[in-house]
Figure 1: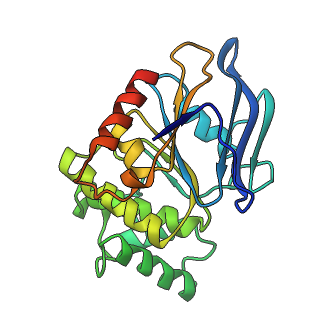
Figure 2: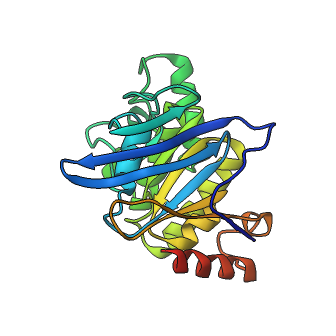
Length: 255
């Protein structure tokens, strides 16, 4: 296990998402000050922080919905703007009740009638365990199944990046672990660069390559960078080992 204050990106890896000395305020209230970190291509980093620390604000900044007061944010080397990252999974349910599941997954596509997009949508729904239920509506599904559909929509909307804002916070504990397993399988089959925000240290460690923790005081700054070793990445969603337990304690103590 390794804890560092910054991470050196290997020469053979490009930077996917980069924040450099980013500051942001709501009016006179400073949220971030001189926040910096870089997510390598095909890695997903977790941001763990207490409520009110600015996790959702961070995702709005990365996605280009908010503009930093100072500093630079780049996604694939470019300044992000609205629509730069379309693969987003929210904490609250975001499926549209008047559209069936297939239509929901296609919502961000240029053409709902495009046969290629429709085939891709069904491929994504099959991947998340919703095969042959394309024409059913959100109210016909459990909370866990609706969250699966949201993952399918995010994967179809953006084939490079994903942002997730406490995506498992509204489901029960057993469903959450099934969704963790799905996330790990999808990451293996459909690699993405991204950021997952959560208040759950175990979730962050199991699902991501690196864990960033935020300071408790305002304005928020990066507190710790904690690397997740292969011995933990290779665990099943229901298994644990001493490395996982030690990392959980490390994350908790850094908050």
